[in-house]
Image 1: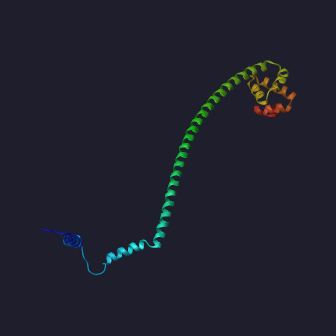
Image 2 (image 1 turned 90 degrees about the horizontal axis):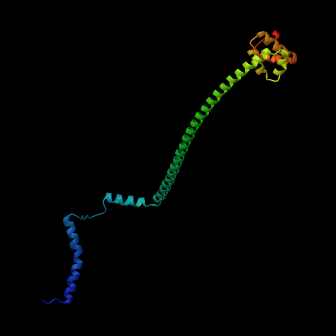
Image 3 (image 1 turned 180 degrees about the vertical axis):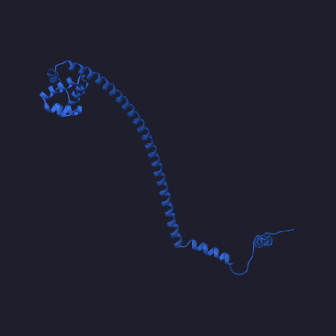
Length: 199
């Protein structure tokens, strides 16, 4: 068998031309491809029209607007998250301040109790001293005691006179103060709760 180059080229060209036809026939036979005669069906036309509509200038403008809205919403969400974080930090700071304030208030109350206790002790000591002074002034002559008492404030004088055991001694002492300064005697009388006429 003698095959020439021309024959070989001819067979190659025919094979090349027949291959698509044979391949398409196999696809049709297996049902992989369908062949329709006539125009496009309505479903295909609708799909093509929808694709063309989606890519119209109006649709592109709407897509651009939606993209801007999405970006604005994303930025707003980030800002809200930041504000929420700041609010949580502020709430934690306020809780810490509340705790510090309650601790400071407890310390203040404790200090107040200590101060009141010391004032009470001081008052007791002061009452003891007033009793001692009342005893001293009770044995002194009112004329001698009055000038000394005039150097004290009215409340202290009233407390001393009140502690003098003898009411006659109290009256004489107040009369001696009145002889020196009547206004002071009237003020002491008011503090003692006596009537001024009793002088």
